[in-house]
Length: 492
Image (cartoon, rainbow, N blue to C red; front, side, top):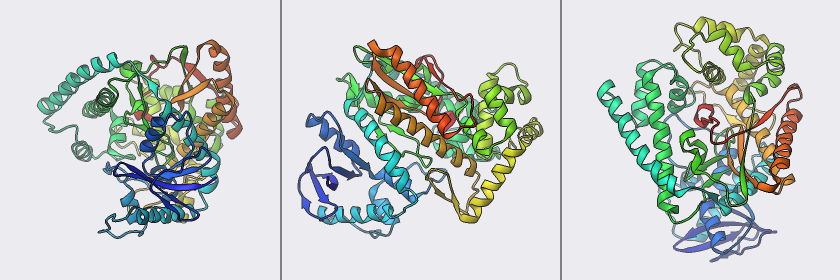
C-alpha cells in the first residue's frame, strides 16, 4: 500500500509518493492506496468518471487540518477553508508565495501533512474513527443520493417568494436593512447586549423564541440555506436523479460530519421530502433520545441528572420547573435552554426568569462541580480536553464559554461515529445517506427493512451504553424522516 499527495490542476491530476517523493503527472490508482488531497470532491468525481464502485482510503486535508490544528473559528469567520491559508498559518510558505511548480507545491503539502501528523494527541482517534468514517461518507458521495427534481423546482420558487417577504418585514417594519448579512445580525445582537454563544447565527437560533427579530433572522438564515441548496441541486444535477454532496468527516471543531453543496443536513421539515429512496429501497431514520443531556449526566455523574435521564425526561423536567408559557412548544424551549447552559450562557437575556433558571441548574450540585473543575483544568492547561482526543486550544483573548459544550459535543460525535461504523461493518444492506446531529438517515433494502430496523436500533443503543454505562435507559428511536422535526441548526 502506497500513500500519495494528489492535486488537480490544468485538467490533469498530479501525484507525489509520500515515502519516495516520486512525482508523477497522473494518479497511480489502486484501491489499496491512500490518497491525501485538498480536492476530495474532485477526486471522487474522477473515480466516478472511471466507473469505480468503491473508494480507496482518502484523507481530506480540510478535515485533517481541523482535527490536528485544534483551533476554532472567530464569530464572523465565514470564509472557506483554503490550503494556502493553512500552509501560511504553519509558516510553510510566505504571504507572497505563488505556485510555480506542481511538484514543489505537493512537497510543501507533504510537509504540512507530516507537521500536523506529528501531533500524537489525535493519531489514535484518527486511526480508529476518522479513517473509517471517511470511507463510509465518501462511498455515499460516490454513489449519490436520490432526489425528486420536480419538487426541487417547485420549492425554489416558493422559497424565493418567502425570502422576499421576510426581508421586507425586517426592512419596513423594523428598519433593519440587509438583514441577511451576518454583520447586520451581529449588530442587532450587540445592540440588545445579548451574549454571543458560539456564533451570531447560533445565538440567534437559541433566542428566536424570545425575540421576534431573532426569529425573523433565523427564518432568513434557514430559508436562505435551503434555497441555496435547492438552487445548487437544480443547477448542477438538473438532469440527474442523484446528487453527490461534499462530505467532510471532521467538519467542525467538535468533529461533527458536515455536508455541503448541497447542505442536506439542514433542510427544513417542509423541504426534506426532496430526498427519496431508490427503487426497491426504503428510508430509515434513527436518532438518540436526550442524547447530549444523557452524556452530560453520565460524565458529570450528577445523581439528580442521572435519575431524571433514567427514570423520567430531562427536557420535560426543565419545561415543568422553568417555563410557564402555555402558547409555545415547552419541551422544545426547554431543550434550547439546556443548550444555552451547555454553551455557557448566563441567561441575562431572560430577565424575568433568570433567577429561576439559575436556581434550577445550580440544584445539580454534581454537575456544577464537574463544570467548574473542567473549566479550571482547561484554563490551567490551555487546552479543552476530552477522553477521546479532539482537543481544542483555548484563546485567552476571548471568553472560553464553550469549554463544557466542546467536551460534551466532542464525546457525542465520537459515540455517534462509533455507531455509524458499527452499522456499516455489520449491516451491508444499510447505506448511510445523511448523518445529522444525533441521528442518521439510511437507505435500506425494502425486503429486509424490519430486521435492519431492529439491528440498527440495537447497535445505536449498545454503543451508547458501552461508552456511558450509567445511562441504564439509553435509547434510540426509529422515526419518520419526513414528519420528524430535526432542526439541525438548533443543536450545533
